[in-house]
Length: 117
Image 1 (cartoon, helix red, strand yellow):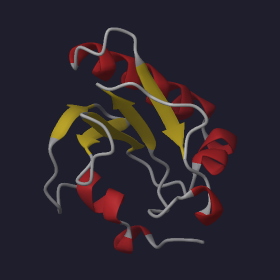
Image 2 (tube, helix red, strand yellow):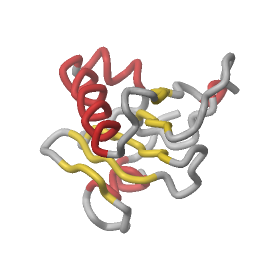
Image 3 (cartoon, rainbow, N blue to C red):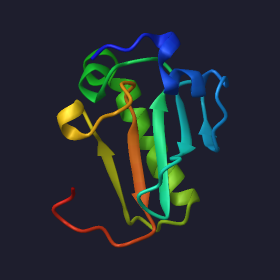
Image 4 (cartoon, helix red, strand yellow):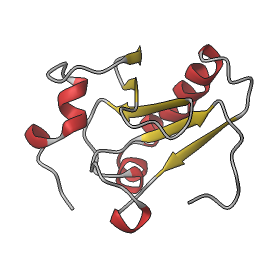
């Protein structure tokens, strides 16, 4: 499901057109708190460039994919998660992706069960 960049919620957050509780910003990654948190700490990390999902991003820009994970670890540390957190990419509607701009969920602050979802 392609999303026009001008209609993309996360592109608009990256551009500052829609307010968000931003916890980290760099040239390539913006991290902000999820408006419907599923854990005490629930931060979304998005690349500043629009890519539909994690598979597309990995194919187009492996460095940006790695940077999302690197920044997630920094944010987790800043949030005091002490190395106990979950990272999740939902890719495609069947996996629960609802915004079609790659985003990595950082979840922590509570015990996580397995299997998820």
